[in-house]
Length: 267
Image (spheres, rainbow, N blue to C red):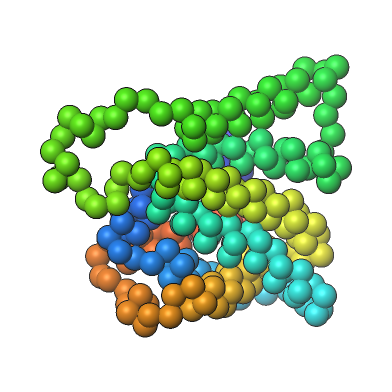
């Protein structure tokens, strides 16, 4: 019974893990961790954590890596991991953890629209499943837009402002900037899902594919971080919550393996 529904169980697990990522990341960045350096260390730890699994569990699935295939993996890493994650953490810096978690509901909607544009998905409004797809996409996107643009009464006024950490409550200007940046990050993530589906047909070693992407993203993120901020002090890792947040995000990357139906024994 469990083996029959392992893919569904794995996806539920992924969503549970997702819920904690924006919260821990927001706190770490609010405490002074540079978002671009955060992405670099996260990807570095992920590459190190995935490499043993990729080497030992997929020795029988090894496929030749041509230069063109490596180039494809490099570019999907640039779009789906490096660009998406860096934009994501910039958005978290300017919004709230709740908003970051809520806007991920727009990812299926954006992916569905992009899949239609790339002719990877078909839909007909004459059948119930086609109507369900369109309705679900609209509801998911509208929910994300509500979180982005509808502002309710502030609860902060009921508390002493001196007890609120600096930068925890973003200004209206920063909220708009964060909303747009988060939408761009989610769009990059959706493009990554679509592009990766084609690359996986050429390179079926799924663990190795993820490990290679993390390695490429680590290098790309290092270049990005150095280009944006050349102060050596930002590379210092603070023990405590920042380090815990990076480790948790590595756990998230490991959970992403479940999307490719790798046996749950990996965990």
